[in-house]
Image (spheres, rainbow, N blue to C red):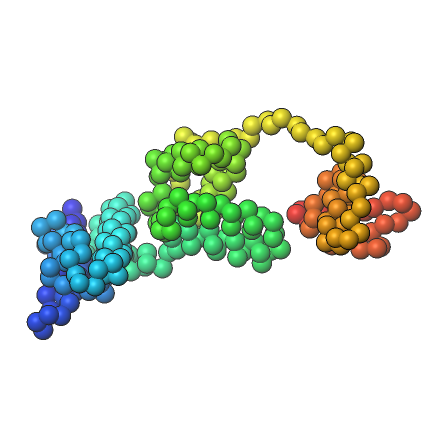
Length: 279
């Protein structure tokens, strides 16, 4: 079985940072992978193969760097373990195969980056509203992850359940939670189709349905009061009121559809238009 070790090579110059590298051992063949991560000897514990919390005079700035290195090592090890699992399923392999697969996997986007790619794709297809919902979902999920990206291999049922609990604690309704989950599920399924990750039933334990909500309506008398309100001294409110009433008169036309209306869309007392969302 292949083994992976994280090693530290001290600098030959006194007082200079040393370098971290990964040691890949398989069938008694040893290969090294340079990481590009630089540390002082006092910042590395070889026994636990972990970064030591900062004792550096630079303080917080150095601390943030060390945390970043620790996170990148964790992700690299996930990539290496995934490479070994994938190669094991295909038959015999060598240490060189592990190194090659590791470097190739570095070209794969993180889950967060893949969502961003889908947002760009949707905008290119003219699906602006859908791209906005994906942007909202990414913002929410990134907030939950405290700004950290996540690899597809790190996405799990437990993590999604934690995200669901996070949304509940922030007062989100079941339908709002489902809204975010369904977008993440759609992105994940597309990644599976593109061969970026394997199919796993990650969303089985989180809510992705739609609950019926109580229908609410403004009273007709309130509509009349809004219509009769004198806003001549406040042109911006007057315009907003006109937009609201037009939306009301057209049975809830969306703003984007209103914005794209032309005079020619009205003929013989009939308004005809194609919805931007589906058209």
